[in-house]
Image (cartoon, rainbow, N blue to C red; front, side):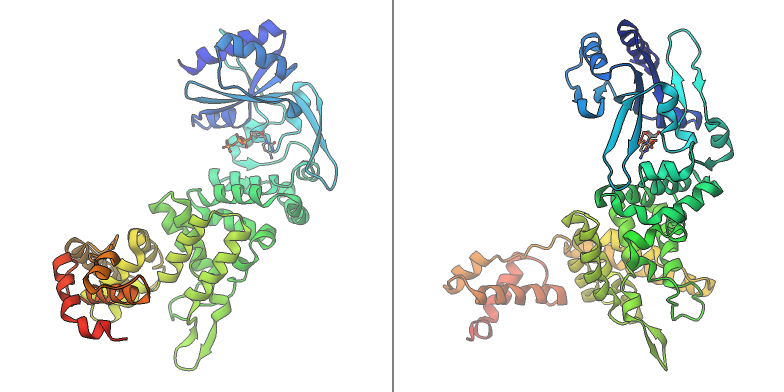
Length: 461
Ligand code: CTP
């Protein structure tokens, strides 16, 4: 079923109730930008709950979810996520996020929305050409690429302070400019972000991180002062200079470049977060060394610890946190490998430590090359390719990525007549080390032989 047919059915259901119905918000905006979406928001000028009954009957809907308190309901129909809401005007009390909603006409509903580009409404009367209702010159702003609030921005941001982050998200995603008054109001009201729940902030932040060039959003977040409120640790990286002679960028700008490099390669939010946080430990570990200039010894470990705290506070999942910590802790290893001869055993150890994350780790390390000296870039990239090639060779031969010890604890206990205990663990570790060192192949028989041969040393109390 195409979207016109769906609109037609919805229109007729509304007509039966004597209600007007319009498509609003992102769907209309995106259509004018030649993008098609599957999420469609409707405004019902009438009683949305009564309309839900009618629509359910006419479209034979089984999965309709109602939120009577908010005058809204949603349903999935074919491929589309449809959301319906009463036309309403909302007012918020100063210190609470709980709106007091009143039924309203289309005009006041649109005027309480966040940005002019999101105040566009579309009629869906069958037969008539799609008419756009544009009270706040949203189409013009869309053409010019401007983010502007329909009302006084102070009012719009007072109604929902998360909109300050939404302004930055849309500016980043569409490469638009935030109009001056709107921008000033964000800077002025930044502290109001404190009344917004961390979950909503993080959700919005992720959307900024998932843009084509996340650096644009992070710079805006920083300039407006919003970043300081929910991620002060990243603001700390500003002005922390790097030690390299040709590395003019501070840690903040270097990180933004790494982030944009990663964004060209991957849409994974976790990998992008790893790019954002991989040098977060630098400000805390910065020391001046007569010989080497600025150094950041141990920043990957300090960073790992900080990430645990920051990401937990930001309500990221334990899986995301573990992943970002792992990549951060290991991000210096691949390049460190090439300083000396790339030995098989060093490569094997890296694959063992990184496990399934080895490919992402290598992507991060490549993105981390932001030097402006072409000679250095060439050298680093060659080194990187060399390590990558080695990884492939070792992987193919040694199957080390999802390392499972070829001799398990049970077998060791049987062989030496041992009770479960630390001794078994020590023997397993001995085998593991031997494999990683390349003293023995990653195979059952060979490892068993090795244990038997070393029986006396291994069983020594
Ligand atoms: N809206 C708003 N203030 C908010 C959130 C949403 O005014 N804090 C309005 C906007 O008119 C927006 C519509 O509700 O267009 C739907 O919101 P949402 O689905 O979050 O955003 P979209 O604009 O649809 O954008 P996208 O789906 O791309 O996130």
